[in-house]
Image 1 (cartoon, one colour):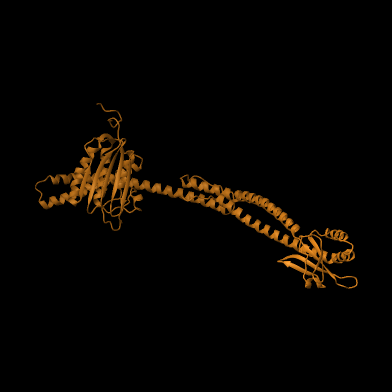
Image 2 (image 1 turned 90 degrees about the horizontal axis):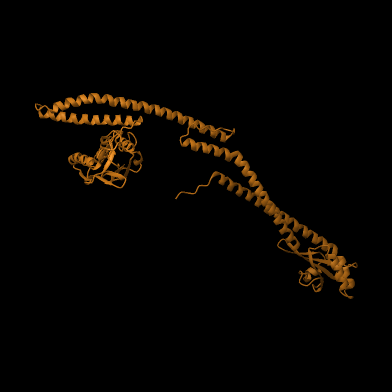
Length: 486
């Protein structure tokens, strides 16, 4: 399964979102913590100051009106506590810690133990870093210490303020985050992603063969250097391709000239050899030498013919224009008869499955015969023991020729190279098998010109199968494509 691709633009967006989100989150947390700490410190200082300033008037009020009723006491204490909303409750205890008065029931702890109540110094009670209770001694004008005022400190206002502050900071941070992401994306897209996209698109077009494509380097930076490098690479590729084409043209011309020049002397040599073979007066030893020379000259002539055919095809010539309606079954039976003799000489079993049904195709018979023979010759060459098989089958629209063997097989990394020119499956230094390396290349060229396909499957140590598929012909036709008379 192909891995899902994440584009550069998406990666930049994720990077920007992650980076800015982390930065704004840290800033928001730090601001909230500092603000909360400042608010709590302010509350503690204000509460301590309030307790210090209000203890004397609250104590005087209690001492004056404790016997006449609590109404006046309530009024005076409410008046004082309205000045500091962080004081949720006020109580008055004697020096033994006995609660004598509290402003509100269940509104905050205003009790004190004997040590706290009898102390001449303010006593502060904390829960963690929160000040929750203040016990302030009430010293009368005479210097007597009979009571202490207890204050319960509330953080509800602070908590609400912190919550509102946090919501405000988070909201501002989110808006700032969105704005920063948008600005950063626009800047990065304009300065980096867009130029990179242009270079990437041009590079893709160049890789597809449009070597005339040029990239305008609008930036005097690394992206501009990349654009120049891609342009330089394209120019170098064009130059290399031009040189390769020139070299290939020279090579093809040389191959054509060589094959032409080989054919003439070979024809003369083969003529004399045929004359010698017909001479009954030759001794047996000479006849054997003539047979060897005849076989070698035939092989050289076939090689020269193959080279000439390849050169003509590579120059754009269709060498298979002279086609004729052919019964492929009969053609393959003739090939099988000739090849069976060679297989028998090598001790290799040869099987042919062709059948008697006609299989009409419009082909250049010599070229198709040569293509099939190349496959059989290769199969025999690479099969030391076992068998070689030739099979013909047909469907509604094409004929299928299969050549299989039980030979050495072909390595998977060699299969893509099989139909390239001069490629040999064995080392050219060892050269442990005969062959020029153009047989399969020529076979594919011929099959391509017939509108067919050739495929190969192989397993090392098990054998190889080559498959040729040729289109079946319609009505019987001549080579000028005019229907033949019935």
